[in-house]
Image 1 (cartoon, rainbow, N blue to C red):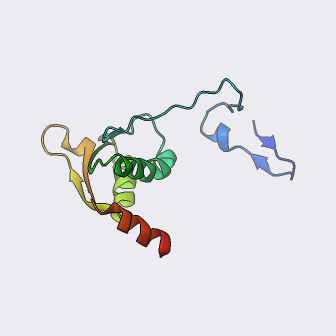
Image 2: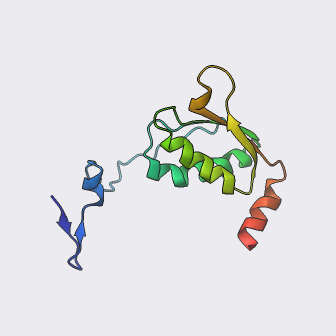
Length: 126
């Protein structure tokens, strides 16, 4: 069940994921993620994580939170790989690794730069 766009191309992006199309209405409520230093990714698709994690890092820096816990779950490791890839390239990340103790493979601990304004400025300039 694909839809044709005005230019004749087929649009199946939403149906591909099995999600119904949601139209914007005045009643649509924006869901805010609390900035606590812990981000649980269980309810997000891998494609959503690519923009969510960097945005959450920036929000934590604004709240002066410099250690994060990102819960990606154990599973096949797809979310963990995506998260680690993002973290390895992010200029505000000092270090990251698996959480110690029970369930350690299901969460990553992240340390952020306290001088994040410099890192953000370098990223924006370069």
